[in-house]
Length: 232
Ligand SMILES: NC(=O)c1ccc[n+]([C@@H]2O[C@H](COP(=O)([O-])OP(=O)(O)OC[C@H]3O[C@@H](n4cnc5c(N)ncnc54)[C@H](OP(=O)(O)O)[C@@H]3O)[C@@H](O)[C@H]2O)c1
Image (tube, helix red, strand yellow):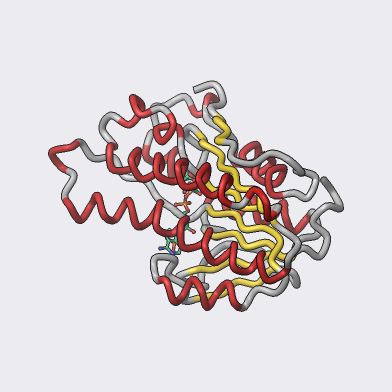
């Protein structure tokens, strides 16, 4: 894995988040040039690095902003889509606005970034790698009780992944997704102080799988939805 990303341009959306920061750090260690779109540049906690390009003012639900951002990335090799978010809400509390917000944050951002990434990869003519992030309730809908909007939005990410893998298979653009269970992040520890966090998935393990799927060493795996359920 160590040299596979050297001088390869990789986009990481949500690269300022809990999982994203770990993924960016690992990619930089592996020699990648990382391009991270962010709504705000300040207070991201990302380390400064000559191969880290943090581009501020990019809201990933804004079609034109997404296309502009990708147009600024030279020779795109891989695009890893971690932007998203979670909210618990029973059906009675799920307003139209809440449902649409979950869909936009998780599904629309992934779609717009997949589309822009494909455009960039077609320009290089060398193929590429796209990796999305679904979630356990997106594959196992019974786990979506109490969070139907989130589960639906992540199920759509899974469907998007498989459909694009099929559509792009002759262009050497491999499209996969991971479906993590609860990640061991500071936000989850704050939200669930009584839970046994030792059973949660470590961001480092999730990042390792994301890098494997985005790597040129992955020559065949496409259309996979990988459950990463740790011991939960
Ligand atoms: N944490 C878990 O337990 C868990 C489990 C399964 C799946 N996942 C999925 O894994 C991914 C990463 O999770 P995480 O815990 O690292 O989340 P996080 O810390 O909340 O980070 C989410 C990132 O997405 C960005 N983002 C969201 N909407 C955006 C938009 N419209 N435009 C630009 N950036 C946007 C956020 O930017 P801002 O700082 O600007 O908000 C942030 O950088 C998410 O898709 C999440 O649904 C998480």
